[in-house]
Length: 298
Image (cartoon, rainbow, N blue to C red; front, side, top):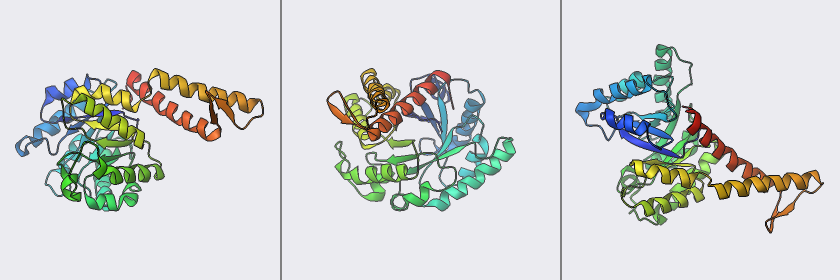
């Protein structure tokens, strides 16, 4: 799955919002069929999501959040929107790997029905329950998993499940956020997403939140307002100065290695192969995100 720095939630029953989001600055949108959609609008949300996928042409990736397995809607959601232009399903309210296996079976059947290759649609589990955090390693080893979203929002499902009292500093969620990053890296995942900053007007708080979590190891963030997209893109990407620094680091190391050195001094710092590999990883992730933005990779 393409790396995404910013993923904007859009209520599925509001078609004009979907169209505006697709034309916006977020790397991807998440068409919500779940919590943001009233029960009597579920059918409309599915139709809108399908139409958006059918009409897909641009740079913005499309994910869909279906309803949870304890509802009567999830099967119809998967059948309606499994599509060649769908990047992934963002799976809500999971309790273990068996839940992902259930979704995998439904999606496989829908892929066959839609005549698209099996396994094309990825899964991104959203960790909103205490059980999913406890069993995260087995959950991330389940079929189709290509990323993960850690939930750390104020007064949301995860707050109720774990029982923490949210603060902007995030001390109460530091352990769970760190645990998700470590498990995701161990599973070889490069899409490690965090949700979300709820104060729409506090852009400075949003920037601090994004920068802090990028520093923790997250690669992107789920958003609820379009104004947060450019902030997330900056925070989880590399600016010109950082890009130049890491490119120079790799060049300095390669020049040193060509001269027979295993380590060199770069801008006053000792660097060796580990530093060069880290720089290459960051530059590769940044290039992939920029390439997707320019070419429109789903």
